[in-house]
Image 1 (cartoon, one colour):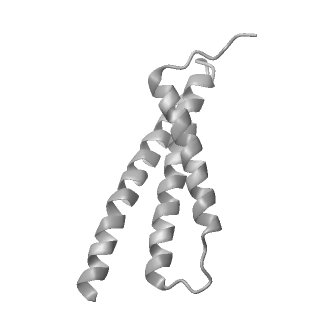
Image 2 (cartoon, one colour; image 1 turned 120 degrees about the vertical axis):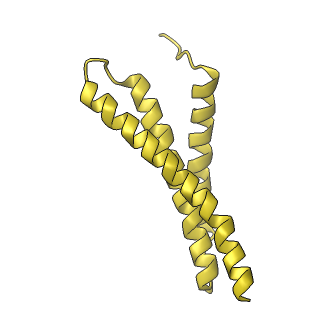
Length: 106
């Protein structure tokens, strides 16, 4: 049986994928019944961040697994990886901006 030869980047993506799944599970288990709107929006931003990053890791991993003959699949995976990376960045940027806007209102 042949072992997977993972580079440092691919190993980092695998660990990051596992951490994203753990983050989503922890955020889902930590739901409060009396959470206000601010906490709900912060939780949804964090869940979107973990979800988009998980999608990015899966899309990059599938690029390594698919056959080179399937050019249309590879192109779609590259587009998915790029868009999910940008959406992750937007969510990460939105969380501190949201917290700053809440502080200014108070």
